[in-house]
Length: 432
Image 1 (cartoon, rainbow, N blue to C red):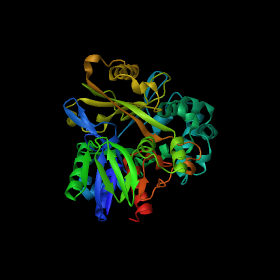
Image 2: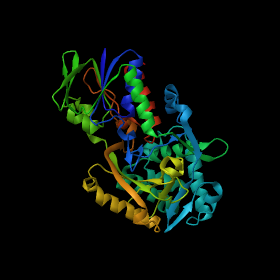
Image 3: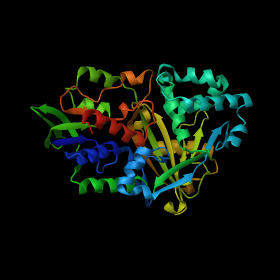
Image 4: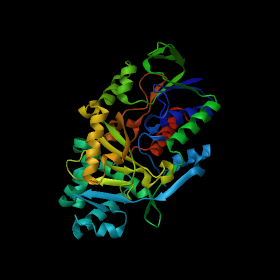
């Protein structure tokens, strides 16, 4: 039996691995020159590292189990990290209880309510009820209006743009759960990890494993059309080459599926068309010096057009980049935002200008190089009652399935959740 997988991100690679283990003849089709998707790596100056920022959390048990199959679990480096907050024109550390209690922008009652909100959220096991509530209603109820306007609202705007107005409270539940999961049990220290060499190492190892086991990985193959022909499904590339399969799995975003599979079931088509997606523009900066001790700096100041500041070298060994600093400046926005169409030079100028508002002593001479990564379809916005309206794994066409980030509910998008989703899909659709 032949299976064709469209999309060579971590989801597609993992599906190919499991299906090949189960005895399927697998072909993986990826339009880019190399597999990886959002987990892909690139050159930044003389170094190779992740195009977008990624970490491994202590609670990422599914990902860590997969890495153990490849032997990469032994190369994970764990490190305690710190978190910063930029608000009211000042940078504060918010890495432990003492710093939280000393945080000047909030009064003691505000802090107690904020801490209570986070603790309450961590106790909630199922977010189904939260899916029915707007995120602002739930946060104001437990944190109060002042804390919402001072802390939560700027964070929601930074992460979701104006789309926060359509978001359910399940989003903040998932965000806080991920934050708590990064803390080592008992010590309450935020711990993250990375594989030496980053996702470049992970991808090269996984791709080699797949090829050794007989998976056909076809890069530079952009799908133009998929159609059913008898008991087979034909995939035709933009190069006019046609391949036939017994089963086809689409891991690309819904807008792409609707272009290449016109005959999708009308009910599923309506669901996919209604999914509000968010994309990301992320500037990578290689700097001659480090900016702060914080892995993440949350920027809550109005008018600064970045989600936050991710200083990867606060986590990764400095020797990896010869004592230079690698910094990510992300901004999440809707796929049709005109910023996507602006030049790299304009975006770099805008984002580095925002960075200098937080770190005004940074000079142009200290910027070694800058690169822009952009993706219009990263994750589906968790609107009210999203788990009820999300699409099915089935397209309505026999033998053609879809699984992508739109199927992730009540969780933040990360590689561990992606692999968890893959296991759910394989169990339900292929009984593996």
